[in-house]
Length: 492
Ligand SMILES: Cc1cc2nc3c(=O)[nH]c(=O)nc-3n(C[C@H](O)[C@H](O)[C@H](O)COP(=O)(O)OP(=O)(O)OC[C@H]3O[C@@H](n4cnc5c(N)ncnc54)[C@H](O)[C@@H]3O)c2cc1C
Ligand code: FES
Ligand code: FES
Image (cartoon, rainbow, N blue to C red):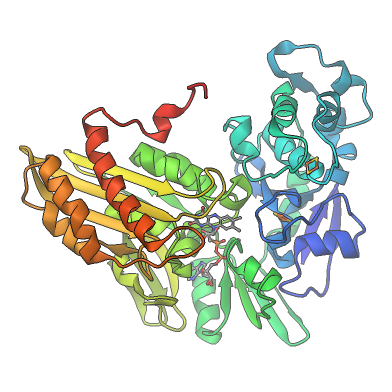
């Protein structure tokens, strides 16, 4: 496999399919600027930028190198904190925010974001600093998610000592850094043309480039482990110490990542990353966009895919409840062809999904809600940013002439799988849209679910929280409850 680092092609004839990019940088290349804080995608100390060839040139995105496997870099460019002094942009035009004078940025031997972190006192022990610098540098060079506020861009980076004020100030101080990636794009075009594969100590890996190639590979290796963004599988290796024998990487299967928006529906390939569906989802409904904004940090959304979220089958995955409530359909493709099923039917039991050997999740179709549909999607987690749900509730109620004619209600965190709430739906359907129906349906949730108690919430808390999410839908309709979206911009 080959990738580009600071303008040089790195050629690795043999790679362990599940060696992490972080370990390779630190232990094989001596690039110890990139830190290991948690090894599970939570702290952002290991943030690097990965550049891919796209129609507009090179498209960069920040990812957590601790849960990215080395073969996933094939045909891509890598930028680490050490790169900043060596990249063309170190000497490039820097546009400080609001035209403020930025002497530190212009006269320092440090790259602009490093200089601003120093000038603002944004670093104490310094362990988190390279990660913040890379996240903020990504924003300044126009990487994926650069349109987000600085606070969102660093929501996946943790600092234990400095506090976030000075770090936010450093990020705000550099508005834009202009890079010229023309030469890099040409280099990438030369090395990214073909799919890669390899073998290391009897363990095989493949990186196909089309769905047809993927289908043929799965027919030959039905037990292979597919890896899309590795934001779930990465942890099986770094924390679960699991060995994967045959791995098929999906990141280069371009036709698996397509997103099509029509007046009737959004259809997305299973390989579409959360960062890429954020805007289309927000257009479908603002609550769905907000849900995406709260999936992991930007580094996780820049790698994690909607298909991986579904295929993983976690009872606390955030995508499934919302997509089930919206009436999404899943298409699977395998040796016997394609089959399409309502998303809720895919989840059979804890850890058990309706996926046959040799099949892969190909696409998800989400119909646009019809007129008169009341939608409410809400995630409750112990920490607002970058945390897994305790309860995630999604409601789509069709209201015609004041009567609820159709109700789809789904929850995560309430059962062994993401699930519809049949008793709650029955209590709503055919009833006048009003407080009485909402209250009866909230009570009915006790017949639908007997949730577990765990570190994220007790059984009683989950049941009450789920009922309150439904009550909140009603209050919101009455203009008596504000959503998180409405809180944006309010002090305190
Ligand atoms: C720090 C952190 C925070 C997170 N926060 C959230 C959160 O807030 N909400 C949330 O829901 N999740 C969260 N996650 C979990 C994870 O990011 C998501 O589940 C993500 O969508 C997984 O996608 P992936 O592409 O990374 O999957 P991978 O890890 O690559 O794969 C996951 C599983 O899906 C299978 N798979 C992948 N693609 C396909 C396919 N096309 N067909 C068949 N099987 C396939 C794999 O074989 C594997 O079993 C978080 C993870 C981390 C590390
Ligand atoms: S080391 Fe913490 S996110 Fe990678
Ligand atoms: S400066 Fe010490 S963790 Fe951030």
